[in-house]
Length: 300
Length: 338
Image 1 (cartoon, chains in turn green, purple):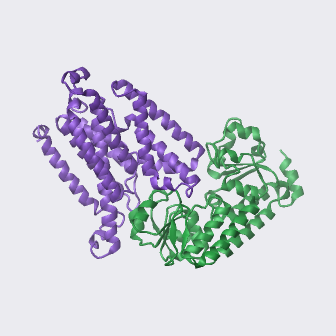
Image 2: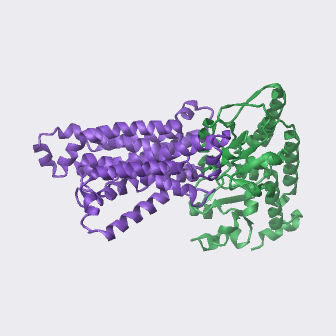
Image 3: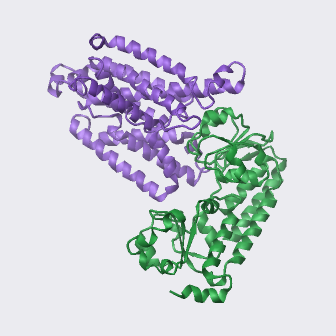
């Protein structure tokens, strides 16, 4: 699976290099985008695309970002142009951008296109796509740093995998994304991260990427580790029947604050850092040294 | 003055038209970049674009959508002889939501594989969904002859299609935010072509409703009276339902589910003048346009450069004004039959 994902990414990168001579590229809605002139004023309406632009070293060309883009911190001082779902058309046009980056399902993108702006829809939803989007974006921005960025991400990812304690290998995990409870299944982007770290997900991908699961299902499945955001973590033991969960009793819970959650859920250039976060949490639970960790974890 | 106005619906109509034009002019001035764009409109290409291609179509579009909803509201309340009837009564809101929901799902799943869907867009999907829902209601009610049956069928279709949307959202929770945007309604993405479409549809609906208004007047005296007046009640009712569906579907497709305009506009008119249904439909349409355009202006300016959801403001504005009228006036006047 992971080999396939990176093979795809490499193919995409090679493709981008060979197409450098070309004058157009296709975005994720199938629209043909002119590569020239090289954009100088960019508006981004998706946090992961904002991060990608900056990772490619083009942060200075951003003139406006959506209200959810908060990384790197320099983008917080840019003009606000609404959210990805409720963009402020007038504010965007007033910035005179020559490139607007949006998600594929963004409302208003047709409107922006009709106003004569160069709109590019890109949707990095999983590993392979995030790497492909970096390649496409590099092509559009006229830089060739995409390959280096991908290599760094790949190195970080390998580091994260090697940091996972052996005692944690094959452990069954439950990743709750919001109280519903909605879980990240194996087919989600988060599920892919867990898989690369050698963990087992208790929620099957056939249920969809973020299915609403029955609380009873989690109790029955008895995950070894629970991963959850800090705003919902405290309420877990008070859910009916959940006090019997061994993971809760043994405090095998990874709690992420808002900033960590941003790193984890965005399929952007920081996704390997998300994997590192998970690996460090697993080290906290199972210990860096494999033998002592195993005994500690099995204690009640 | 009040009494004088009560007898003169045309004076009110003239006033509403003037107010509409005034608000439209104001619409060219208000936005996140303020008056600067207006001052430089002849000098700067971007300012010209902001005023001419963004603010004006948006303002005109908000007016047109409000006018369609006001018209649909007056037709619905006359047709069902119920002051609580609103344009979404025949299931068009739930149908439009489901259409948008399905379109977003398919677009999210395979954007490149469905170019026809891109062409159609969420606008087409919303209109299609609303139309299908109304047809479904008509089929379930077996025609339009029985008001109660039609109302119940509309409620059933609304609830069932609403549940279907919830089911789709359960499988695709990432669409929830996008759907919330549609539910609250927005006038932000209206361009000149959408404007033209809404105004064209408004003209068609207005002429038809004007022509069909005798049956609404007749129905206000009871079904048997309407029939005894020698009017072809059955075909005229079908035509009215079609007007209702077209007006609502067009508005919903371009601006989402905007709350309360359709319900409040006829009441605001009734609280001011006494008029037959022909004038009532026109006045209520103008009133709806003013209500939504006013709400849109406030949505743009109150928190600029942030924007408020326009649906929230229509509810607050329309509801507040209606309450004020009710307290100020003889309570019988509001909600009484015209």
